[in-house]
Every structure is written in C-alpha cells, then in structure tokens.
Length: 151
Image (tube, rainbow, N blue to C red; front, side, top):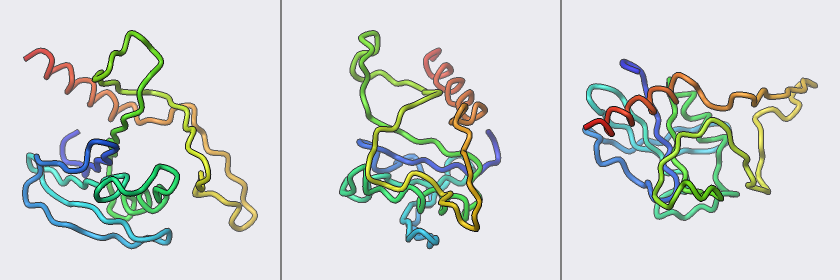
C-alpha cells in the first residue's frame, strides 16, 4: 500500500512504534474529544500511532473514546488503519504468542457508545457489518507476514 497515510492503533502491549523517524506528538480535536498520538515517518510514508488505552495503559476498554479516535483519523485523512489486540482464544490450535489477522469479531465491551449514528435529524442508520475489515489492508498484512516467514 505505497503512498498512503497509515494509522496504527496499538492495543495492550503495543505502546510505541520504535520504527518511526521524525516523530512528533500531536493532538487532534474532534467533536467527541481530544486525541493524542504520534506522527512519524517509515520508509517515506506518514504513519500515525495512537495507544488505544492511553499513556501507561491507563484507560480500560469500556472507557476508550473510540469515536474520538476514529474521528481524528478521518480528520487526518488516513487511508488505512492497522489495529492490534491481545485478546486470547479458545482454539487450542492457536497457542499463546500466535499472531492472527482476523476477518470477523464479536465485541463484548459493554457500557460505551457503540455508534456514530444516534438518530440525528430523524435518520436511522443500520451499519453493514458483514465485512468489518478492509480486505485490501488485510491482504497486505498477510502478504507482508508471509514474506517475513520466507526469510
């Protein structure tokens, strides 16, 4: 995915991106609140990095301001978002330390706003969730992982 702005949202255990050059901390103001992140460069591409749970892993999942995070990335005209998560599995064929590129998920986080669409102007929106991930970005991640495994 050359020549695109990429955002990385780090989950538990991913708090910084040491690969970035020319890093600077930025704050983006959205209608949902302020978002702090790092802007940097990697191999000539602009990368934005945010720690989902804030500095020092201080924000629990149900208090993460997801809407502000996504709104900030939209304001920055980000083309692709890569997000990490450390959630575990019940599948015994995936031992601890496995890496998975998911294509579906169930979100059991409770007590937070779940949508951008709250009936403003009398409009009811049903968000299509049949394909929640960008297949192009997902394929690029899988291809990169396969190239690393071949080395």
